[in-house]
Structures are given as structure tokens and as C-alpha cells.
Length: 137
Image (cartoon, rainbow, N blue to C red; front, top):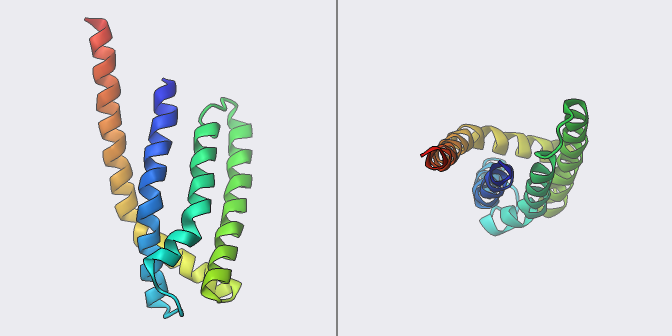
């Protein structure tokens, strides 16, 4: 089972690394910031996505639900602050505008990301099921 705990967050992290900058770029175009390139959006989201992926893998192995929720909250707040600071500094906007840009990017990308996550989860579930059926025979 440890393969799923590592491979799913890793695959979703890799997808996120190229997926979310697209929606941040769209959001910056909506709000007409000075720099609206994919390259800047990628640079802004690189470390938050890498950190999130690493913590997703680590937190999958914590069995105590209380500790898990506390760690997710702390990591989530930390990543939110990092994300807002990176948007603020790279796009030269205030924290309020950085929050709105981040919120709009998240709302635009939420449904496509959930569809991709469901498809990847379904495929991984089929792979896991097939590997277990092979052991039964």
C-alpha cells in the first residue's frame, strides 16, 4: 500500500507543477498585472507546489487523525502565506490583490483539477486492483 501513498501525491504534484501556473497566468491577465507570462507564474508556484507535494507524501504515513489535521492546517497556512508573498513580490501588488489573484486562479482551476485528480485516482485504483487480483490467482 505504500506505493499509493507515494505515487499518487507525486503524480499529482508533477501535474500541479504545470497545471496551476496556467491558471495563475490567466488570473494575472484578468487583473492586468505588469507581468502575465507563464514563466513567472511557474516561478511563483514552483516552491509552494514542491513543498506541498513533499508534505503530502510525508503526511500520508501519519495515522493519528488529530495530528494529521493539525499538521495539514499548519502546512496549509504556511503555504498560503508563502504563496501570497511570492505573488506579491513577483507581480508587485499588495497582499490584498495577491489574495484576490490567488483566489481567482484557484477558483478557475478547481473543477479541471478535480476532474484530473479523479481520473488519475481511478487509473491508480484500477492498477492497484489488478495487482491484487493477480496475487489472488
